[in-house]
Length: 128
Image 1: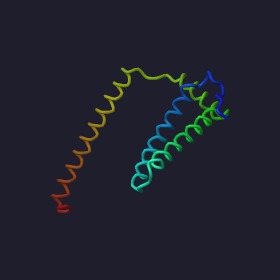
Image 2: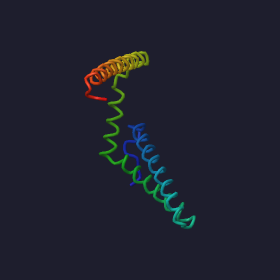
Image 3: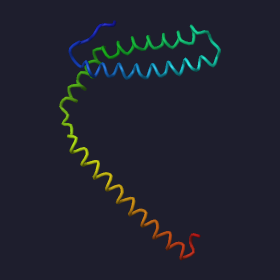
């Protein structure tokens, strides 16, 4: 049940999936532990139940990422991510500047239209 399917392939994607799921599980266990503290339970229940849940989820996620269908999907995902043509830092900075300047220009135009309409409606007595 707990053996690694195609161990040399897709290791980063599988490891990332495992770490992400465990991060969610640990946060959930912490929240559960805090809820159990409010119920005045024993220390064994307060920490034992969340720990057992995290360990059980760790085994479940490990099994899931090593199931043939899931593992093949994660292996394919990692392969496709290697084919992606990522933008350079210079391109990203340039694109970000264009977006920020365009947003500021649009905000100024909208402010101007809003101001003109407010003055117009006020002079016509529509708003007041």
